[in-house]
Image 1 (cartoon, helix red, strand yellow):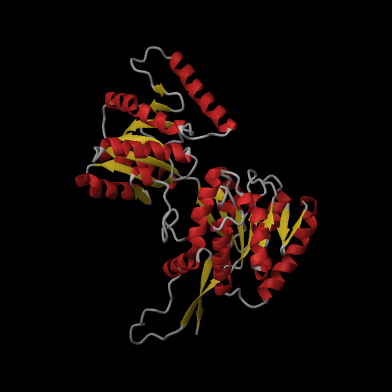
Image 2: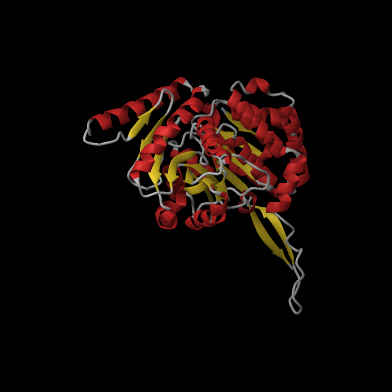
Length: 421
């Protein structure tokens, strides 16, 4: 399905809608700018209705309801206003030094912003468009393949609240393999916000023309670093709960647990001690049949790999009923088996920067468990390596008002700064 100018069309109408798109965009851009207050008011009304359960029928999944609840809190007027003040502060607040000619500087939208969304978080496509609206852009959204129709149904309801925004939201279910359609969407865009894998980002790079702003929100790999404890039982329970709750599907999820040691025996001992804690946490998480099957297959593959290498004194894979830990001899940051299957590696504190810098473009969140006296020094080492979020292990995927995304303020990337004499 396709959403255009507030109406929903069958995908069979795609070519006709694409052909009409340049003219429709030009007409909207020729009119007055989108008032920011209009968007803020619409988002506030939508947030109130979401919290009141008005769209509960669209949210059958409990985890999805939690994500929507968080998004709703972030869309209230007070939260949005705070974010605008933080990310787009007044440009003329500073007094020019004597002798310099004063002039006006204003924020203006890029114009047309194409969002190519990833499918690892159900509310992400809609939230990305909300950011585009806040910055006054016309938004073209290419849905991820995994979208089940939730996004279009949400925007249908949203535009009933704010029909004045209907010319600023277009949603296409165009597959990435439809290159002519993708090229058409890109050709009318002034900026492209692409979420997803290296392959997705690379493909968009090849299609984007010179001068089109490419805003990359690529996949990241999160990890936990352990160097002593303040409360071992509590901190490991919180880490296990985080791994189970996120199923390791988010960019901020823990894929690797690093231990501040050079001794593999400590890695093996940690796996033996932590596995029951992780298994208990994962037992309370209901997986989809597909996720459960994938998790079982990964653990069985690891078992076969160990069976083929019986000369190892210690098993490299520690298997529980619902989870597993793999003791690795290398220190590279890599994707885990997901769904409660985590990697455990050695990384002495002196090697944090040289090792993690090798994968710096994938760094985002580090969960840090350590003695209080070492937290500041270890935090600085992690930041020096390229990490942009250092959190307590149980809080790795927490979202808070005013935070940056991958080390940048998103709204700043969706605007131009214009000078006026």
